[in-house]
Image (cartoon, rainbow, N blue to C red; front, side, top):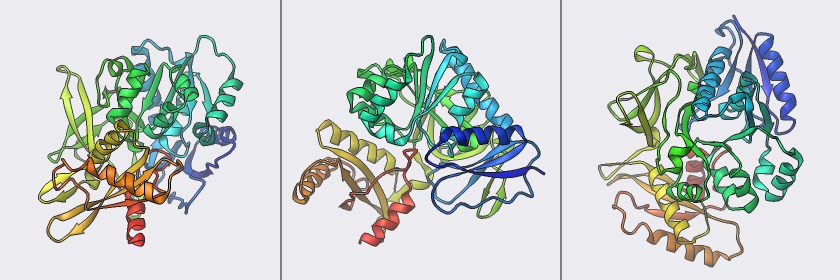
Length: 412
């Protein structure tokens, strides 16, 4: 039976946390990475496998707390697969400078550091405060000095990418990277276009806690040439679609189990395949290469008037229309409410950028935003529109839809 050590990932002193994590792994512990907020439940330890590993909360958007058990060997394999992908792009992993702005209690923030240990590469944590403030970012970059011969790489969520693009300092920093992996949420057409116009070497990717991070990635040159989607499989990864178009993944680095309110559950079902919960399509580039495109979460899809609707697609479409028209939009979220006739209808929550205008101006802008949906199908158009000054995704750019549904009920 393995031994469990809880590790609280406070917002400060990342280096000390990572030092403690490394020592615990070397001593053969399973380390449960716990966020610096909320109620943290330690998993039961009587079923932990021998050896070392991490217990990480899943970053999915379906609601409900779930912890994935990833043995160290799986994380090593993930790092090796990503390193092989870099080699194919002409980048030597040990010569990389890895910037990490993501929280380490999530697999997306854990893996940049883990890769640095496996590759022998440099790793630099970047705080959320620095990512949000151009002046702090400028001071931070000035303190780093010149790193000759190293290729800078970074993992971002779309919200971070968008914020950096709006400032000259952030844009210049983005242009210095050899690879910018972007995941966690869909890239809007507007954000893709802006990134290409500025020559950013984006690599849209797909992965999950259950798969020890990335399982597909799009080569930066393909992105710059106009390709979209999340790229092709990395390492031993196989992809297929279930009958409802739900993406299924098979890989040797699938988590050994998950712990949730029902106790311990095995992830894989039919011959080692894991069902992700994401609706997708697979386009064959050749007889052996498959290109992945995501359409939205199966669990957030609704039936409205007999049609299946993916709110994420509509949010992205509307967000792009707002940006193209110069409307200072910050966030849009579509939530379902029950409807006797339609089954479900959508309610739109909207937040504008924090600029100086009064409530009257906000309502005028909201009316303008509504006009963009006039040409949409009736089942796509929101039944209600509501301003929400606090509307925001989480640190990983994902929406906690249950949280905002509660907000909507309380505000009605």
